[in-house]
Amino acid sequence: CTFAQKQQVAADAGAVGTIIYNNVDGPLNGTLGDPADARIPSAGVTKQVGEGLAGQAGAEVNLDIQSRLESVTTRNVVAQTRTGRPDNVVMAGAHLDGVPEGPGINDNGSGSAGLLEAALRMGGSPQTENAVRFAWWGAEESGLVGSTKYVQSLTFEQQLDIALYLNFDMIGSPNAAYFAYDGDDSDGVGAGPGPQGSAQIEQDLVAAMAAQGVELEGTDFDGRSDYGEFIANGIPSGGLFTGAEGVKTEEQAAKWGGTAGISYDPNYHQAGDDLRNIDRVALERNAKALANVVEAYAESTEGVNG
Ligand code: PHE
Ligand code: ZN
Ligand code: ZN
Ligand code: ZN
Image 1 (cartoon, rainbow, N blue to C red):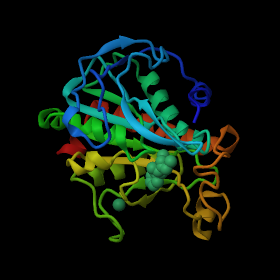
Image 2: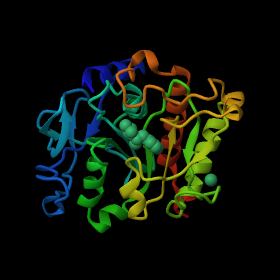
Image 3: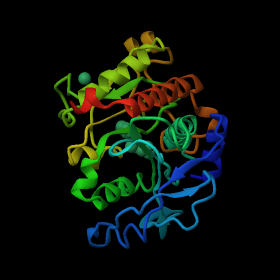
């Protein structure tokens, strides 16, 4: 995917402003699957958003580009507010990379832009109880590499400092569904429940979308996005999703509009995943819900953490 196109989505979402930005010390990893050289994130470094990724540390991953395997360096960008309790951090993430087959606008310029909008709306020094940490993950499409290495790079204490994690991967699908990750495994099929507190996150997301007149459905924590290593380490998690290759039912089309019998995103992982094929209504609703829950958790996570 091209970064310029993702920047364009961000610009469409009205992005302007300054936030803090936590640099990462040294390479996150030399080779895939080698936890030995994982590094711990350093203290915050203030930078302008959009100052570029140069100087950020990276991880090497292999991407199949035009049938040649190339080793490229990829990065996470992590930004935390200056204010708020650093031992009760509200974390939200979206992957910034895409697949080589297409520009990656819904997957996942949409989640990246929604997150950026929430960060800009909040600013670097909001007067909130809890610190907020935003992560734009690298190498999700190569096997959740950036988010996995990040969580594994934290000490147990640093993991405990994360009150909860919210994930946004595809929030503007052109034949949109409205899903939240099923924190309590309410349907009892597929993947099990998330860590304790995840059901409350699901309920809070349901309320945030209901306030906009949209009824959410649950979608399993099936391990296909960056919440994986967070739930594996017991961190309460949740998030929004408007669907990928799954097919919209008649019932869903009646409830949400769109077309039954075709997938939520017919351009999923294809060249057509571009700016023309975003449902801007779905993107706006999800971005609003995202910002609203992040701001609510910045005030208190007691409902989730007890
Ligand atoms: N993580 C998948 C991708 O980036 C998309 C996805 C998100 C699938 C959430 C299921 C649930 O391709
Ligand atoms: Zn993808
Ligand atoms: Zn994705
Ligand atoms: Zn549920």
